[in-house]
Image 1 (cartoon, rainbow, N blue to C red):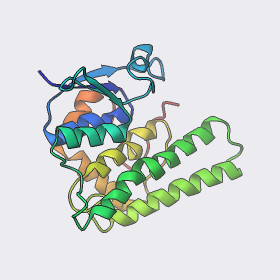
Image 2: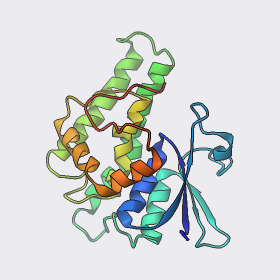
Image 3: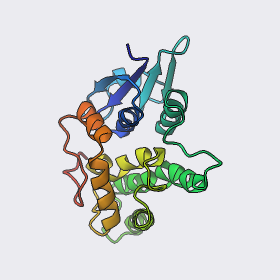
Image 4: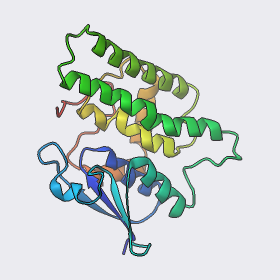
Length: 226
């Protein structure tokens, strides 16, 4: 029986956790929850005081650990159950690069994508309003930086997949169901997403987590949910 239970809110950032565990080869039980109709259902919000995805339960601890926050879940699982794989150690020459992109995923890219969503959802004035201009500039700057990095490396922090990739791909793909934007100007990101889409662990995790969702791996966004 799997010690790890992943509570996955469908079409959400909790997709990161099954993907991580598939890459690590760590067994887990997956429990999926549908949005009701857009936000998490009450039973999901009751899992953790954050009320947000992801949430994991580790039955190998006593009395059993319940943990939220993507970054915390990824690092906990990789360190405690994955032997530290997908993390770069301080003695490695690429440590600083990894550290930057690992924090960049939720510190820069995801906020930029979310800002564009909130500005659009709140009205945000006309297309040429200052709020929308700022949101577009922040997102474009983040995407240009990533595209430049991926012009030099196969994955974000080098030629091997790391936890930085696991954290970032959601904002480039599934997040576009909520905050549509084009990747047509970023050829290196598009090539990168094709590499991700060919990974057996990614395909397996997404098929388990969101079997009815079309993967957003191309230049154009899917039809928005908002």
